[in-house]
Amino acid sequence: MAESARALAHVSSLSESSETTSVESLALQACDDIDSLHEVQRAYACLEKLIVPQGVNDTEEVYPNRTELGALVRVVNEEMQRRIETADTTMESLRVALREGGARHRADGG
Image (cartoon, rainbow, N blue to C red; front, top):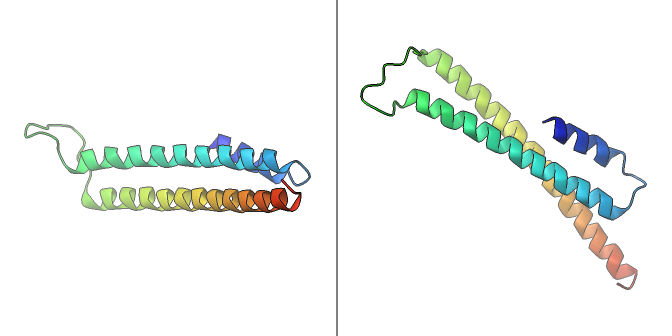
C-alpha cells in the first residue's frame, strides 16, 4: 500500500516530466494496486475457510458468531471495492496517457 502511495506521489510530481516517465509510473502503480487486490483476495479466502469447515473433525477454538462474520465480510468487501476502484482509476489514467502519447507521436511525424 505504501508503494502505491509513493507511486501516486511520484505521478503527481511528473507534470513537467516526460510522458514516458509518467506512463511508467502509472504502470508501476497499477502493479501495486493489483498486488493489493491479491492481498484482499487471500484474506477473503481465509474467511471462507473459517465459514466452511474443511473437514468433519474440525475442532478449532475459533467460533465467531454470524454477526461478527457478517461484519468482517462487509469490511473486506468494502476494502476490496475501494482497491478495485483505485486500480480502475490507475488503469484509466494509463490508457489516457498512452492514447495522448500515441497522438503526440503521430503529430510529431513518428
